[in-house]
Length: 111
Image (tube, rainbow, N blue to C red; front, side, top):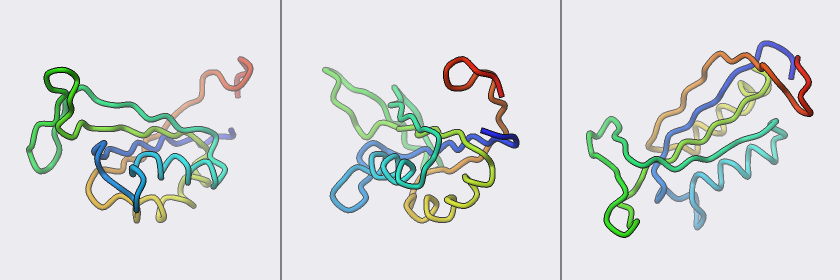
């Protein structure tokens, strides 16, 4: 990756859907199709958003709609190119674009 590098962070609920598939899976698959350098999905233990409803893991691991965070890092130009499509997929949630600096890349190389 060449500077400038950005980090795309997307917050959604684990039960959000895109057609018949979970939204987070649809987003990651689309990012892969679009040639992004990589993406990671992390499930949150607890959180809340603009609606103020607290989402958390309940007894026996049963969820009441836990938060999910999708993170992707790539060159700014590539992220800005795909951003309109991703924003169109996220009906409720938050999409954040942050400045990033790659410290170590593939095979331990530095940029």
